[in-house]
Length: 226
Image (tube, rainbow, N blue to C red):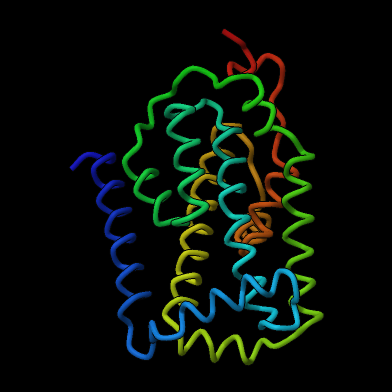
């Protein structure tokens, strides 16, 4: 079996396994999902009406697609097509990593032409990475200040919806780490093992990498415009 087919098979098996665990693992219930969603949306106008960690978790799921988009825009060399990336990004805002994972497993690894300059600049903008980091930090700080972690854990044990969100979070993080390792290889950047351990911190690790990753030199092939 070729490396490409091995990657496809491994990615799809992971995708199926996580969905199965999230939906059918004993202890979870689909009852009350509509009420939870309603409470979350009310929480954006009145945070006191919903568990802070649940609201933070839901908010972070809206941030993850932008993190993955930053990695895609900064690819050197650029892999796949611009439109496929944008379509996956849009759908991932609704279906999460359950959309991105099959795309990542199936897409060609062959280098393509560079994307439009605006997309290229987006992927290499430290300001964009800083904005994402600031939003993530604000969400995390909100949950810490408001509290309610014990109640969130009880929701996690009782609700399949919350469990699916957790599975989605872990899949996004796994995808970000895969893109991070490939990006550092493409940029010929070498980091200390302790730095890679730091980059493995959920959400904040990949965001820190985006903030401080090695910048391309003007002579790099990816900097040559067509």
